[in-house]
Length: 115
Image (cartoon, rainbow, N blue to C red; front, side, top):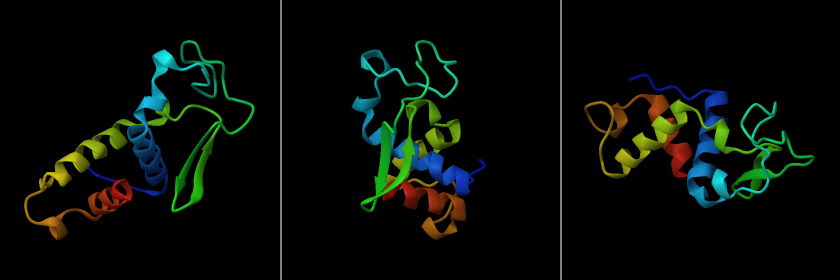
């Protein structure tokens, strides 16, 4: 298993946490906004909104603003890390050994998701 959280991966992971945390707000079937993507390539998309429609706050500060929906931005890697976080809460780790014997990138991801 390869785990990596770089600068871009951190942002994508924060977006995934926001979408998972507020999943009821990211239901495509009931969405009236239809600002799904930048290039109008997703079915029914109107393209970006004329203003920042979605924002993610951490520690009282806005860290991400977007004119398009956050849901399509979730990557497979972020989804996988969210699954690993659920296992972490149950006391299971991806590699044998204790918490401090896990890869640093995994520990960083767990910290990002947990906060």
